[in-house]
Amino acid sequence: MSATTWRRPPLIASPPLRWALIIGALVYLALAFDSLQVNWGRVAEGVPRAARFIAAFFPPDFTSRWGDILDGLLESLTMTVTSTAVGIAISVPIGIGAARNVAPMWIYLICRATIAISRSFQEVIIAILFVALFGFGPFAGFLTLCFATIGFLSKLLAEDLEDIDPGPAEAVRATGASWLQWLNFGIQPQVMPRLIGLSLYRLDINFRESAVIGIVGAGGIGATLNTAIDRYEFDSAAAILLIIIAIVMVAEYTSSWIRTKVQ
Amino acid sequence: MLRLEGLTKRYRTGDLALDGVDLEVPAGQVMALIGPSGAGKSTLIRCVNRLVEPSAGRVLLGDTDVTALSGRELRRARRRMGMIFQEYALVERLTVMENVLSGQLGHVGFWRSYFRRFPASAVDMAYATLGRVGLADHVDKRADALSGGQRQRVGIARALLQRPDILLVDEPTASLDPKTSRQIMRLLGELCAERNLAAVINIHDVQLAQLFVQRVVGLRAGRMVFDGPPGDLTPEVLTTIYGEEDWTAAARRRGAGGEADDEAAALDEERMAGMV
Image (cartoon, rainbow over all chains, first blue to last red; front, side, top):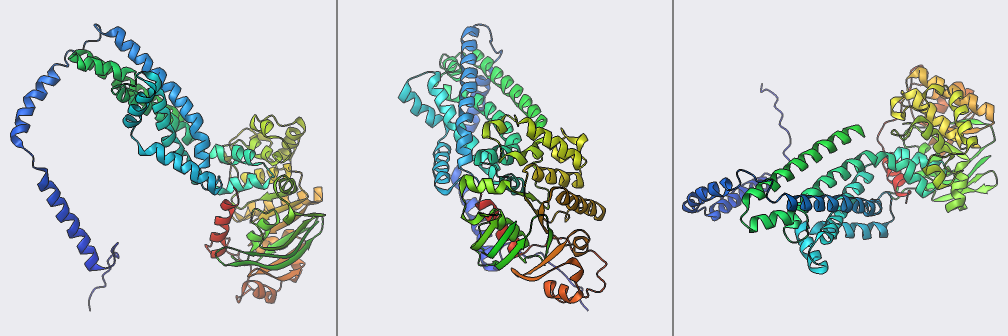
């Protein structure tokens, strides 16, 4: 009499296919690592250079370029706040249009296409384009961040809208509410906490991105940082980096605190 | 009050949920609609206010042909039909008062409702109705802070705020315990009597229905197979509606919904699809 055994059915039912996929993936991975060809000699030479480079950052110098740093910071913060506000204002209607359970098909397709375009380019690429179109400075940065905010916020808002509980929405519709009233009473309360959370998160991202796109000419603290590095003023660059880290951390903690409050 | 003529619904999946239902509900009559899961009960009441589009047949509310309406006219007709749901369908993050006042949405303009500046008459009615259903102390609580029975009372108050002529009630007690279920059914009966409201109540619990309604209609596979007073529900009749079972020992409560079936899935899809 043999003991009854049980095994969980495998994810891929056919054994030959299963093993072919596993072995194929492993062989590819092995070949890929092999082709990397790490030159250990160069790595060894790079280490002391890296040490010298890092050493040049210390001690951070906040004072000698403080005026430039402050201007850059204010420009970045202005860019962040304005682009987030405008971005949200544009994202909400697009997000509503991109939710299949709220919008008719043709609007849905237009909004999804808009989101796809916005999401397919990294901020730096868009910034280069806008700098070329509108010249150096924070206006190009503002436009870049607006554009990037739309792709991010609309998509996540649309997904949250598609996940709502249809029951309350149906109940509000049954009262004879108009489409806008239905949206305001049946849908909005369900997505509001997430929309607030995402907006704060985007504010945070936009500040960090404003530092990056400054390097390609879109103004703000990134431009100041770029100038400092170009002049080999690594101590000032270190000061800028520390300020960016501090601001990002403050934004992070504030937004997570607000998010727990609005649940 | 309400008249259905040859009401038929075939879902895109091919399921025939309603098959030529003819039904007349006079003003003030409280009627229970019983039948097994998938018999078309939910579809029927949603075809009445056209949350689900009927495939054929007519729905007449008084002199209005609801099936011929669209846009503003349809919304006007919906005002006259208060709907009450199994899972209460309250907007959980809104206050009790906002949920109740949402029953007035068909009567007020968008900006008034957006800024929650409802007319004094509506607010008075909301306070009075909340008092009537026993929730006077819970006005500013969020809906998700209430118990199941309290939530269903909010759902009832919301429906009453529409100043309806008829209530469409979808499994009002299926999520409630037996005692609360009886209280809710009694409240519905009393309210209909006070206001001369007609009601169509989908319900699984046959015995509970028998206690509180004047008429029972049995639905099986989308067709009406019984129509009569609650006293006529013999074991033979229950067999016709639900199929073979030992109905003589029917003292126990019947399974209360929740069974997944084709109708529920098709209905779900349609509910959201219709909102555009």
